[in-house]
Image (cartoon, rainbow, N blue to C red; front, side, top):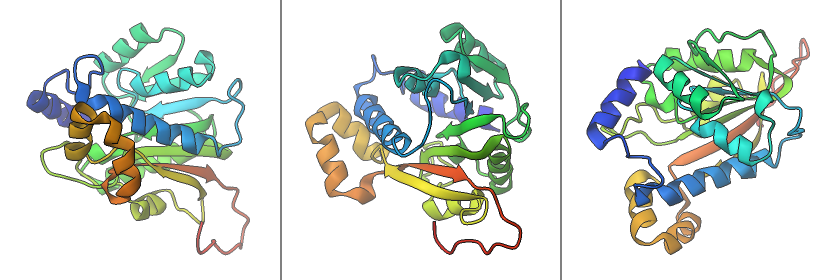
Length: 241
């Protein structure tokens, strides 16, 4: 399903749609997304030299690059994607990182294998909420108790953009059972909605973060960091996290 979504996206927009060197529209969009990632990770209690990280829907490895820039050990990073072609590209690009071809609904890892499990703009490309829920359950399953899940995705959907399902704060809370299985550690808005962000990134980059601060609703991307809780039998779920 994700394969057909991405194929249609690049047929419509071209293979260099998200190329930092060849498309100035995407530069500040990328800066904003990575700034949000850094902001939430600063709230996590992790040892970058020891933490094991899994990127679900890793594609050709672009999202993993930010962990390398932040000082995480390559040997502790892993990615999984359902496209053999993209995984092969990721292996060529990052030979010291562990990559797998696999189904996000049946991750090829044991329970609690990772300290941090993340996804980046993958869940929103799917239009089947049951499928999204199954992937979320798998992400939680392979996260150790006390470990973290990080969701970086679009909170608005729009036809023709490849964003099929809005990953709103409420939907994220539902998917990851906030108050029962997880608690929210931090949330940070990132990239502006593409029609605005791409134009600003190209034509007026000096205004990008000013617009983001003045008009929070214009930030279409949201990064959420959750911690997986140990559930005490008989304990009442928290009303808010």
